[in-house]
Image (cartoon, rainbow, N blue to C red; front, side, top):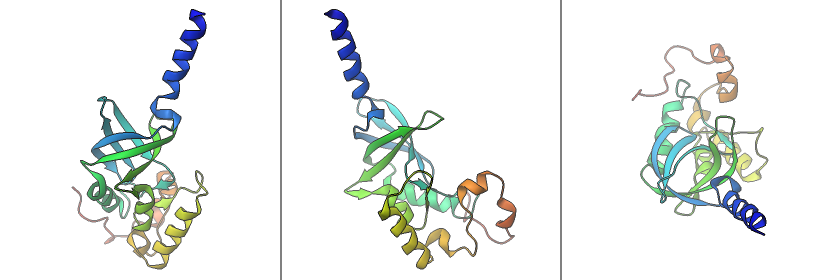
Length: 171
């Protein structure tokens, strides 16, 4: 029946959309911070992507600008593969980004430029990478008392921001 055909067409359309987990090729046009990017698909659709499994320091936090720079150095202007996981409350795609065979979300953790977002993943590779970065005092782990971005956002900055601890140059 025509009704069944319409429902099937709609189901296929929804299944093929970016939120069903179908990997999509996307050119990075902006890096907002260490875990959020914007990219444009071949069909000229702009996606705002919050990188899944990780939580990078806020821009006003120690290593916030360095985390943004590390992500930018890795993928700005590149055609990446975004594998969507879900959509967040702000309508952003939450997903995994890979480039040249590398898991960029994982790379941010390996470099000490992001924490594992423990509320949202139990992926052992991410926990191992964070443990390694912490042991090697890479990136944010070089700070004496790094504060989780989720705590920083909820106003616990006072324990961290001692004078003389800058997050690098502000661009």
